[in-house]
Amino acid sequence: MLDFEIIQAAEKPQKLLIFLHGYNGNLEDYHTTFGWLRECFDNSVIIAPAAPEICDKNPQKKQWFGMQKHDPKNKRYQLQTSVEDIIRIYNQTAEDIKNCADNLNLFINEQQKIYGLTDSQTYILGFSQGAMLAIFSALSRNQKIGGAFSLSGLIAGAEILEENLHSKPYVCLLHGKNDATVQFKTTDFSLNWLKSHGINASLRTYDSLFHSIIKQEIIDVADIIAYNDKHKL
Image (cartoon, rainbow, N blue to C red; front, side):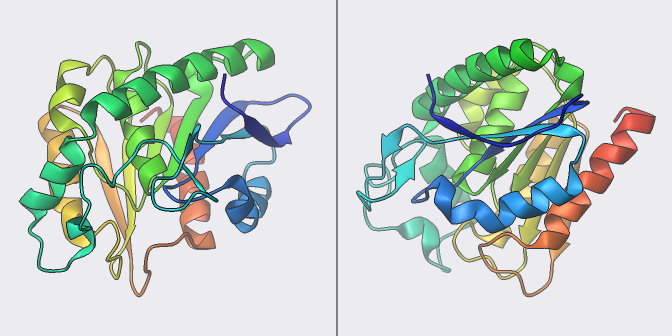
């Protein structure tokens, strides 16, 4: 069972929003983001599970899955590393991310039962490593959710994800053009992979944004979900 924080629980919720934090992080790092989420989703249950593992690069923080064993020299952060090599590094996490996704989907099932909400009313939003897990969980889930939102993420574990592609919800990638941690140049790969597998996907980019979350991204996510309520993406 995952530890979690209830960011907001509306009296009569219309949506379930799951927020997944990033690698080398804690829920305490995201209180500003949680405030933006509360502002934008007043009719929702917003839940942020905590990653279950101690981070392999910082024992004071958490991770969904380890990276040091796959990339001990941090090549994924180096600007000269090719997109192909970055994706190759993240593909090595496939078994770990699948296990995380399986556990997360069980967690989502439990929260849906508690609040009486359905898959079509459920959205997964993640940042960085949490964004990778958000995509994998949404696409490997047996039922189609309302949508998945990747803030500064990419497609990780692509080959195993392809084998476990059980549903095709809308996926939105949101990424800063100055991101050198999950490098911006990977966005074309992720968008093309999604579209080539028949997934309705889009990309929103942000000038001057590094590897972080800004309020405009949360506003954009809320606008997309509101549009989805009317048009069913």
